[in-house]
Image (cartoon, rainbow, N blue to C red; front, side, top):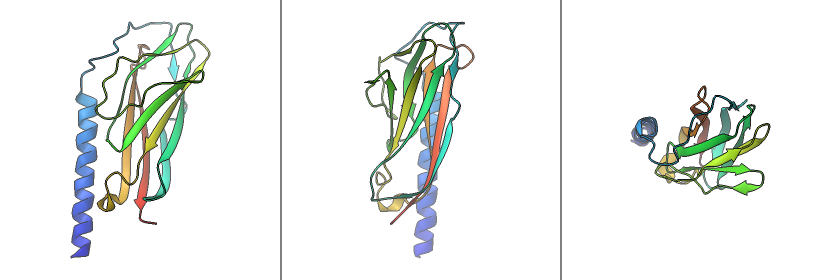
Length: 165
């Protein structure tokens, strides 16, 4: 019986992640529209990360990704969303922090990265958010829209396995 509960829990969590991802990908942008610039170049050397085992009750885990503007015009970061309520994102540019963004957040915030500079995207995952049934593998996604015509959306992913330790 216990094995059956684990399988059902895994199926439910997987369905929630997929539904969140579909919502994230199909949700139209309603805030923070910016003009595209041919002189912007958004770069992210790393877009995926795996925490390995994540203890459920030892607090949130964070991964910081770097977004660089290699162009000659100001890079604008907008419409930041996560694929699940258990995950938040925050951008830091030159020591200034954005609000926290989540799955349902709609914000008019626009981050500006001048040429040659970088922004840090902090992805924060709460392993206890889904409670005791939330153990097992996770995959969460964060999308960041930009004014770079060649990288209109930067997609980041984090993974791991939530364990009861």
